[in-house]
Length: 83
Image 1 (cartoon, rainbow, N blue to C red):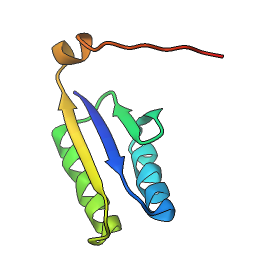
Image 2 (image 1 turned 90 degrees about the vertical axis):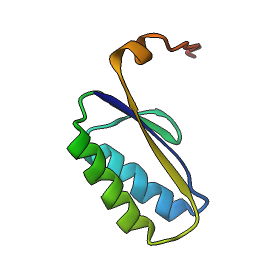
Image 3 (image 1 turned 120 degrees about the vertical axis):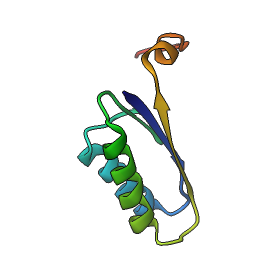
Image 4 (image 1 turned 180 degrees about the vertical axis):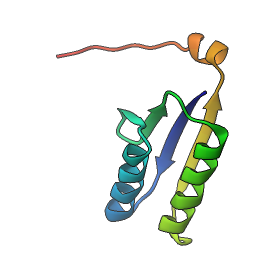
C-alpha cells in the first residue's frame, strides 16, 4: 500500500531528522515536507510513526501519515512544470 507522510515542523533540526527517518524507510520526497512510500505494510507505517513520535519528544509540530489505496492514488491530480 502507498502512504503519504506530510509534516509541519517549525524547528529546522527536528524537521531534518523526520525527513531522514522517512528516507530511511524508503519513502521518496515529493514536496519539501511530503514523502510518498510505494510499498509500505501497515506494520512498517506503525513502526515509522512510533519512531517519529520518539524523535519529536513532544516538541511542537504535526506529522500525518495517510495510507493511500491504489484506487485513491489513481484519482490524484498533478501539475508539474520543470525548468
